[in-house]
Image (tube, rainbow, N blue to C red; front, side, top):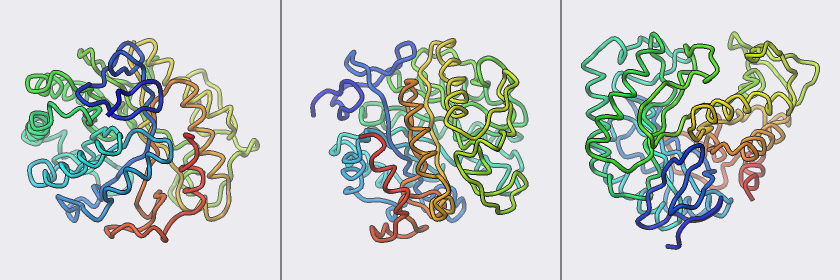
Length: 357
């Protein structure tokens, strides 16, 4: 395959993607990763299959490539590491053939999904050193198996970490990076901020890590009452975007409380880009998306999605939309079933399939 250059090339044979300052480069040329999430039923937790073959097939890598994308954020349940290598191998091969990078993300670690808002969250991994040991061991096993695979852009250590305190994640991230580097010196490592307990500081809660081939990750679903179509207490409600009459409930570090417009998106995302510049790291918007209800009601979902993509691209932020195939946020709908091309969120398809062209 040809070497990748600029923002739209194909995965380069034999060339690892690397962080150099605030840029990602391959073969010395800058690249801008832009794509979509393959959620792979990971958040089904106990019901999640180790090899989720129903999520996608080979043709879907060619499809997203035709949408102008060059990356997939590829979700794993921890049970897949060891038990699902046949399925991972197939997806790596399909991605390679299409010229698409995989950003492999451990979405559900030992101890369960890190999300205190949608289940009875118990901090299992953070209170149990044995589960933390398993977390590191899983990463060493996965990294050692695929250490020479350049179709894998990098290792996303943990989705939306939710420790009891911020220092726990910084310590575990550094420990895991050191262990991975003992078996895999080349792959980019992606480290996400703690979205729930990160300290309010100039670095936007990105943990301090010592490795020089790291990209920082954050997620963006603001204003949440719009993207989720629920109140802050979780009750269904109808909200529109843009809505200059509504003031955002989360003040920026400057104290500003901007209204729900593109200007807010620009100010919010610029904080993460600025933190990356201060830290000398690339920055990755790993998730942004809008629930199906906002598309169904024509409430501005297409405008919000395009605004976020445009602002991120202009700021040099790498990005992947959530998600390709699932019931709530998916372009294609359905849950734990084979993708049906006729069962689709048409509004989402219209904007997601064109926003990178």
